[in-house]
Image 1: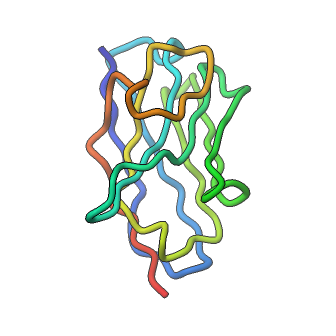
Image 2: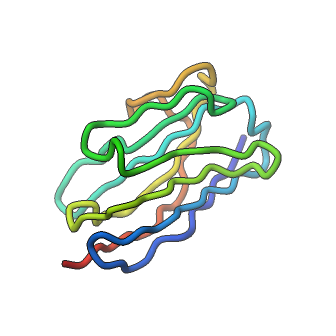
Length: 125
């Protein structure tokens, strides 16, 4: 089964940008759809972005649409989340996840089989 490790989180001022990375190992990466979720203290885990096996189909909630971009490089077993125009409400632990239902982007937490450990993103005012 694939294992996932996120990196790239940190502290950024509102209006700034961060790029999160998720590197997969131990599985056939191109056979997984991938997603990003986030969880702030006291709140439930929230869908952020998803894409299918080759990245030609993506899906975003309105809260990040136009600001965040998910992409993947199957030659590097890597999924990226480019986050621009960050807002304080984006502050959360960000998790990447993999689903064996690889044909389409998936917005539901229950669709995913494997999760990374998370990386903290903090956006200051």
